[in-house]
Length: 468
Image (cartoon, one colour):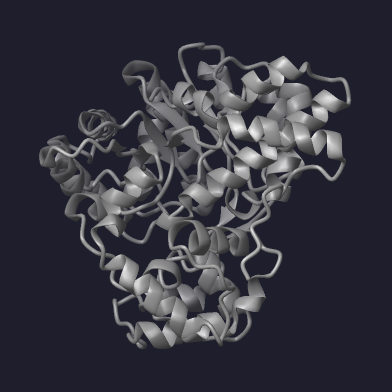
């Protein structure tokens, strides 16, 4: 049987557990604000039936297929397409059976809790997935997906999503967002400006992307001035489709504050393809500062997601392309890396920069102290490898003493796995309520305050920080 215990993730001590349950009861049904994620806007635009259980739960979810691959199960057998778009295994039932036979690999992981929550709460399944139940689960989920109440828009409404943001690159014409807007549907789906493909000189198609960028924006991107203007133009276009934030996924947290002449010279160098890795990193760093200045003008909240060694396996990158589970966390320096940007704009109270990390050692030592003093800085929640119950708890323990609650931004689910969204918010709300209950029972927070903070962490802070 699937065992989603009513008091899961609450403290073991009974008094604290009872208070955590009372806090959770107040916030569990609050609307979901999902200000940063990777669901496909096409789902909401076309509102078509999801293809099959395997393509809903296995093939698109790198949390799932990376674990299976780590145990020697080939990507081809899981239906993961090659870089050219070829899928070796297309039989959804066969993929699902392989997934079910190896479901034990997820024991104790956050993925297991998310998946069990989706199976039970979304699809009404009570038996645990296994080789014996694989076909029953597949048939049941398939039958559900054929019903109108399981179409993307219906699930969006059932999940009580108030607003969800997708992440789109600046070359995107936002066709699906336009289609959503023109459909008259009331669900709020906004876009996010993610300019990495025209900011990273080490991107395989950087020069071509920048050329296309200029064509779309109607500016001359062979010049530094025209290149910056193209960003202004595209950011304004994204705002027409609801964007309230930009997002920047850089290898490091490095920032620069070069003079405009120096920046123009560096831009010419990277555009010619005649730059070192240090030049490329410096350019990315300069662009973080430029984006912060742009945010002061157009009001977009800025998110920085540094510290991932993307596509660690060259072989897998060649065969399958990016986002195939081979992005690995690495140490990140924030104190020195962010100083140039903070010297330029860090004292501006009208600017909001949300910092994320994959280096937990930096939370208490660097990030919380920085966010606890600079008006522009906020801390994003436990992210990616650490959006687990343990990672969320550590985040609160390591940051609250220095940054408090109100220099953080609540929770965001950061997922491509649509059905896991309510599961992830459920976990975050439970963990926060457990942490608040512990503060109350150990005399560090009044009980009345705990109920207010629980609302803030579950709903208000995300809306406020992302200007939603």
